[in-house]
Length: 243
Image: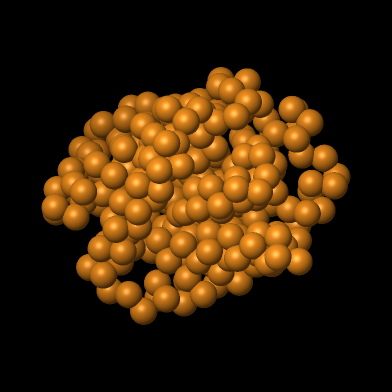
């Protein structure tokens, strides 16, 4: 019973983070669940919650059609990068890659808190999006976390609060589908795991709904502060987990 309560709390906490800032479900939940199960088992357990919450997050945004047309190079790069590095997902995530990912998140968060906000010119969006997506797919294969460099790329587009949450949902949705196909091909996502993953939707959905309610009450400025402080915390967490 205590183990089930721990799993439920880890899933709800990850869902709450995703509801507030649009990310954090796999980073937080897989990290915590890794204390009692293999990382790839945790990733498989989170597959359906990731799929459902990312689809919901993308669909609830303000401009789905225009967002898809703008982000297709990034999404294509994510799919190609994850598929190209598919063999890496069958092994334990690399601690070194996790530490590098955490460091990149921390540096990016510090730049954001210091009000350094680079902008990508429109003429470079497609090319940089394809590169950012490919690197994100590679890091997804190494760490199971699909954040860098997709998140800095999306932030550099100058999107509003609800737009960036929608854009994150779209990019994470593509990453989740690619990850799911790889887990299935590796035999890590069978019927028994699928049933457990379906049950895991409940605490994740509850946590996400609570987080979305909190986000609705935040101003753009407060949201940005929460976003970057959360990224800093996630980066530190990834580094500590790797060590």
